[in-house]
Amino acid sequence: MNRTVSVLPVLLLLASAILSPAPNQAKDKNKKPVAAAPADLVWPLPPDPPRVRYLAMIRSADDVLGKNGKKMSFVERVSGKTPIREEFMLRKPYGVAVDKSGRILVADAEQRGILILDRNAKTVSLRKGNGQFPLFLPVGVAADDDGRMFVSDSFAGQVVVFGAQGTPVAAFGKGIFKRPGGIALNRANGRLYAADAKANQVLVFDTTTFKLVRTFGGTSKSGEYEAGTFSAPTNLALDSKGRVFVTDTFNCRIQVFNSEGKFLHMWGTPGTHPGSFVRPKGIAIDSQDHVYVVDAGFGNFQVFTPEGKPLMFVGGGGDEPGQFILPAGLAIDREDRIYVTEQRPTGSRLQVFQYLSRQSAPPADGKVK
Amino acid sequence: MQRKLFATVSLLALITGLSGVLMAQTKTTVFGTDHDIASLGGGCKGCHVAHQSSAKGEMLLWTQALPTTATFGVYTTPTMNTTPTEVGGNYSASNLPTGAKMYTVLCLSCHDGITTPSVIGAADGAAIANPTSSDGLKNDHPVNLVYNPTADAGLESLATVQATNVKLYTSGTDQTMQCASCHNVHDNTIPKFLRVANSNAKAGLCGSCHK
Image (tube, rainbow over all chains, first blue to last red; front, side, top):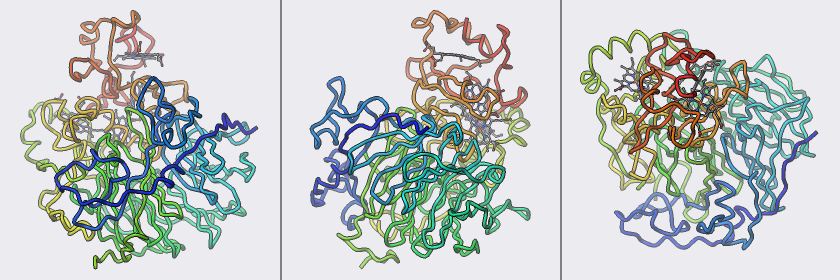
């Protein structure tokens, strides 16, 4: 049985799309941008042209409802409704994805399910496993064009497939995975790529037969930082050419492979300067193949060229919009909206940003005109 | 805000500042454990981040206003000071869970469900659960909360708890419970880095705090 807990009307991030963002007023550089209205938050600050704009924050039912006389939320202000109940509350979110119809899917380990935020149907629901295909620790999520949803379970060591009807219909990888984490789908070759942080490899499955096609990576034998080997690969993303970008978390680097698993290049070292990492996790790629990586140590995400040249960063440890504490998952939808989940001790959140591709059309090589 | 940058301090300088006794003691009990992660530099560096102050940052092509010497603040930096509250104390601005609370954040930065086995319930006072233990999701405990025997008669007095090996962490005027209340990651004498062996006896871990 599919245990959809609640389907409740809500106007979600649509709100942010409707609100036409205010033009980026020239600001005093030393002025804290957080003091401004959310729509004014852009990165980088002037005089550099803005590339990313803050859109919205989704935290908890309270936030959305504006309970107990609290300041009304962004969503509520726009929708004029108080539609959500307790169930809609991010508890321990990790993976996030946006499906074909624009629904936001968030894997929530504590709730042992996937929260589905549907902007068009204006509903929020929680998709859980069932007796045959239970979910223990859902961490990664991906959706294909046929309405199927794939969920990796790092505890059960398998990927559970939900059919277009929203019920779990299959599972695969049991006994092959050690601890699956981030997953991504390649629509062109019909393959699912899954990072396995314990086995130190990436596993590639066929999404029709659910059979293992290949694995790549492995643990370094000859020493540290050997190219093509991993130390806790946690997340991955695919670019427009099907290349696989893997967050190699304990090696503090990003490694790039072609769709067959051939090593291409890598970047990043442990450190605290831009371009380096402490605890890199979620990774995603925008429509112009820029690579975004969150770091739970810095509480930010950095943006790179596909070759690994650092372009900019957004955030820094903190509670304000555009700051993060324990950011984990990252996704970018077809409209170049950027979604970041945070496993924040004082309340988990989902923050949404917009890559300003149309407005400023920065070239993929990152060169500023 | 985004550009709040912190001075970096080299790990070495800090280590030399540590008490030799503690160093010797932790050395023998961190190395070789699960937390001795070679690719992070091994030993202490997985948690107490080493700064590569010599490393040059690259020019950020979209952020030319930023100097190339810029560095990011980390919850674990400058860290390694001898006062426990300094671990993570510099993570960021004043409105943040600083000090003791950051210990739990540090643990959760790896124990997030993928990187290492999860402990669920990052929220303040929310139950943590460890699905990797034989008890499955039933084995859970709240963390990141104030230890308050006045509010809960089932809890031992502060003085009683402080006389045991279990550790409470000062956060402001409060005594709080963190992951490190039950676990001492510097000492694996008792498996799972427990501060007190887990048993049903009154002298066991749970009995240290619960009447």
